[in-house]
Amino acid sequence: MAYTTPGQTREKVFRLVRERILAGLPPTVREVQRAFGFQSVQTAREHLDALVAEGRLHKEPGRSRGFRLPFASGFALVPLLGQVQAGALTTAIENPEGYLPVAPPAAGSELFALRVRGESMIGAGILPGDIAIVRRQPTADHGEIVVAMVDDEATVKRLHLRRGRVELHPENPAFPVIAPNPRALVILGKVIEVRRYFEEPAVVEASS
Image 1 (tube, rainbow, N blue to C red):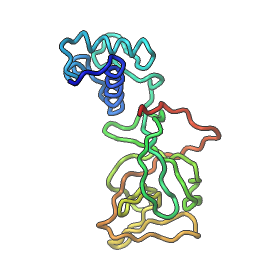
Image 2 (image 1 turned 135 degrees about the horizontal axis):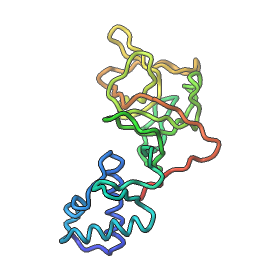
Image 3 (image 1 turned 60 degrees about the vertical axis):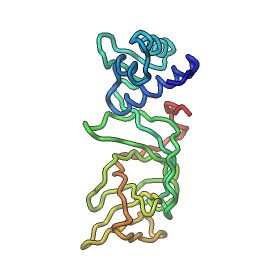
Image 4 (image 1 turned 90 degrees about the vertical axis):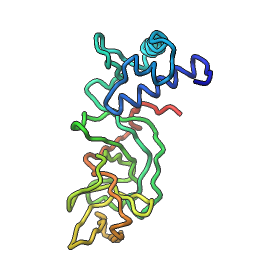
C-alpha cells in the first residue's frame, strides 16, 4: 500500500472497523491486517489498541470480533443521511451527518435515518425537522408510510396500491397525490419510527 503517516493509517483503520461494526460484523485483527497489507498482525493490533486507548473503539475481552463503538452497547448505530422532502419531490440527499443510536433491528435488517422537510405528512404526525427511522426494503404494503424515489427524487408518503396502480398519498389536503409510472418508482424503505428533538440530537460524527 502507498505510504501514509501513522495518523492517516490509523484513521483509515478506524473507518474500516466502524463500517464493519455498523454492517453487523466487526473485523478480527487478522482481517484488518489483510485489508491494509500490514506485514505483521502486530501492526494491526497496535493501531487497534491505540484506537481503544483514544476512546474511539471499545474492545470486549476474549472475543476475536469484540470491537464496538462507544455507547453503542445494546444499540445499533444507523446513518443519518441528510434530508428528504415530505412535500413536493426533491432531489435525494445522502450527506451523512453522523450516526444515531436505535434499538437493534431484526437480524438481516438495515436501517437509515433521514431528516424530514415539508408539511405534506403532518396528518400522520410527521412534521418538518422530524427524523424518520427507515428500514431499507424494496417493497411495502398498502397503507404503509414509505420513503420512495421517483426519477432520482425522493419523498415520504403513504403508499396506496389500487388495481395495479401505485399512488403516493400525502397526509395533508393541500398537497396532491403522486401517481408515478410504476417503472419509475423505487421504494427505498418503510418508515418504522419518527423522532422529534427539542435540541439537536447527539450523533456519532461521520468522519470526512
